[in-house]
Amino acid sequence: MPIISSPQDFNVEDLYVDLRPVLGCPLYLKCEGFNFAGSVKLKAAAQMIDAAERDGSLTPDSILVESSSGNLGVALSIIAAARGRRFVCVTDPRCNPATMRLMRALGAEVRIVSRTDAAGGYLESRISYVRELCASDDRYLWLNQYANPNNWLAHYHGTAPAIDRGFPGLEVLFVGAGTTGTLMGCARYFRERRRPVTIVAVDAVGSVTFGGLPERRLVPGLGTSSRPALVDESYVDDVVHVAESDTIRTVHRLSAHGFLFGGSTGTVVSGAERWLAAKYPGADPVAVAIAPDMGERYLDSLYEERWLRRHFPDLVPDLFPGTAPGPPADAPAEAPADAPAGDAARDLTAVTDLTDPRRSRT
Image (cartoon, rainbow, N blue to C red; front, top):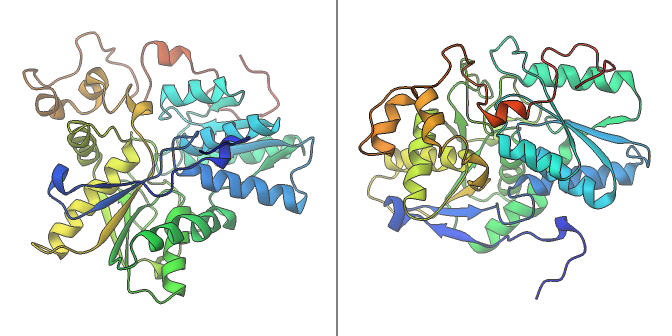
């Protein structure tokens, strides 16, 4: 019977879903969402904060700050709350409204930067704001998940060994690419042990991590508009890019069988299914994919008919049989493509196009 005193002390490490009955695909899905943060990001958050406390950069007066599309922000919010620390999450309009509300419930301050960067995303704008914030007050400490080696070390010491123990005959490992912390930690682990495991990175169409052309992306989680400092392609054997429409189709296929997973997981599973069909047709390799998150925080987006009508109307007839494609009749025509609607819009408390981090906010 587990008894814990800190939320980071609990994480289900050995739960896998056999996707053969669901998708007819020889794939085991490692579920990383069964912890208090609801995602794999709890490991990196704990590793980065612990390291900062050990080296003295995180002092009693420090205010943690990080750029996040959601999952790491929740993980940092949980650990900051448990340790009595202040935390500011800098995010953008693609962050799920439920995720923003959760971070605020945990005591974090959430600031939304809605100025797009040169690649059409928000990452560079978020990082620019974080840098300005840190320059304005030396109490702010940026953990920098995009370049912090403790991000990948969390998975080198935790996630990869757990997979190795569970599947000693592993042949293929699929890992989603965001900051690439999970990807690099797992890839380094198996490479250094000279294990014959094919490492396949799964990225979103529109991401520039592996040299793709930048495009607008609506699903938070995987993909970047700026190449992460952690990525080292020499550790990666292959890359699969998944369109967001395929991500959405996949999460709905999984939910139809009772498995409610998040957007990052849908992307990984979709990419893995396509890669296995091409590389191992009719075969039965030992293949594992890492499921970074669960689906509850996507109920206002990927699983919501109105949101899908607004952004992916062609998918609606298949996902909601008996309905016609097209945007909802009462959708404002001038609404930005990635802007939350209704109550979610009223939850956005940050100022658009922030340039001075010392200015007052409402």
